[in-house]
Length: 138
Image 1 (cartoon, rainbow, N blue to C red):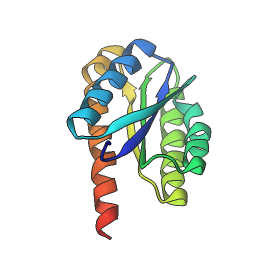
Image 2 (cartoon, one colour; image 1 turned 135 degrees about the vertical axis):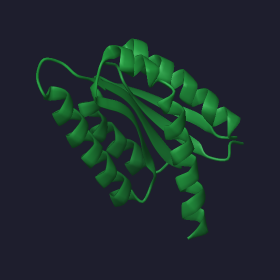
Image 3 (tube, rainbow, N blue to C red; image 1 turned 90 degrees about the vertical axis):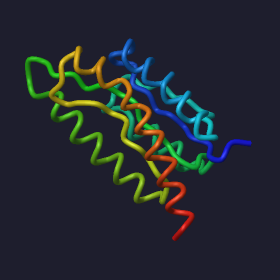
């Protein structure tokens, strides 16, 4: 049995990047004796909070990770998406006393930056596991 069961909420927007992030996250969880037992795809980063809330309500996962890439465009849309989504994600973690790790890269990055930051998905898994461990110590 895995040390912790983790759910992953993954943005379909920029799918080529987020799927690489998911594969790295799965490998990192396995290397740390944990398992990503549920993967839910959502259209984009802005859509994550509702699914995260539903997963948290079920209470079946020790932690949730979020994986997405918010790439800059012609407007400040990327800033708005990343700020609002990350704020709501943090609020949900506090409301449900469950780690929700932010594995969302951006805003303000190019597509090339996003490809270079794919490895940040491993950091989301690491953060989720460390938070589970720390919460056990309290």
